[in-house]
Amino acid sequence: MDTEIIKIDRENFERQELRHAGELIRAGALVAFPTETVYGLGGDALDEATVAKIYAAKGRPSDNPLIVHIADLKALDELAVEVPELAYRLAERFWPGPMTMILKKSSIVPDATTGGLPTVSVRMPSDPIARALISESQRYIAAPSANLSGRPSPTAAEHVIEDLSGRIEMIIDGGACDIGLESSILDLSGEVPMILRPGYITKEDFEEIAARVEYDRAVLAERVQESVVAKAPGMKYRHYAPKGQLYLIEGKRADVIATINQLVAEKEGAGIRTAVLCAEETKKQYHCAHVYSLGALSSEKEISAHLFAVLRTFDTEHISVIYSESFEETKLSLAIMNRLRKAAGYQIIRC
Ligand code: AMP
Ligand code: MG
Image (cartoon, rainbow, N blue to C red; front, side):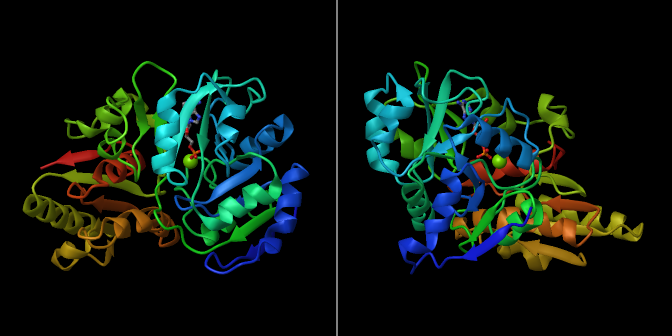
């Protein structure tokens, strides 16, 4: 199919520019659109046939549920049942924004949308284009990240075009995403609120509103990987992964730099295209033909905003081996390291 691409200026647009996109959503078509986290692949969340098309376009396993995007708080009571009072307080503080809440689903949400789970995940994005599209469509929009399953999440329209052109009806190009990491996911369907995916809104942020918040075991397991090449259960599940082998080097800053330089010298000596992934502060200390800085540690959003785009660049530059610093110092380090460890397939070198 032909994919229509429209450009919208998020700072300055008229609602009517999204009229056709809204019609497409109502007609059961797929429209990729920008949000403040990453680009989403949107379709009518309550229509089973549309949801099936989302899974097919992404090549996503159908037991991996979709987040339902809303523009209005009253949607919460339509999509979910037994909504705890805490959910409304969290919504008041963090919506619109990069927080997803998991709640018990109402009967209007098809099983296809939730991957067969009795829960539904809901988010109200803050990006003005995303909000306007949801309102204009008069639908709830299921939107996983608009990448092919397994590839880095898209943080610019070019990434969506690369992965999904010809597979969906429309791509709305609204420029680069502000945060660049997917939303924080908080599960409110059990007794204790659990963080299932770390993101821009941190545990400390949630604790301003909720008395008790815990990390899901999977989030923490990644944080305490000990072994040199960890045999994590999820090792075979490649996510965000570049085609080249990515290794994360963890340790004291000076040791990390020395270890990476030594590894690079070995690989480059053997004629292998090798790259280094690092922070702006340390990039001059690497002796490597391909050094990629994610931005300054002192400005955490730079690191998060650039991460997925740089992971894609390794593919276009045909890099075979990548050595990455760890990014432990910032408020977003848990969220950033969570993505990097997955991208590395848990290949971690401690020094
Ligand atoms: P993405 O499709 O990249 O936006 O990621 C959505 C994430 O939310 C996936 O990791 C899903 O497994 C997770 N998710 C969505 N709905 C639920 C749910 N009801 N329970 C648990 N996880 C969910
Ligand atoms: Mg995704």
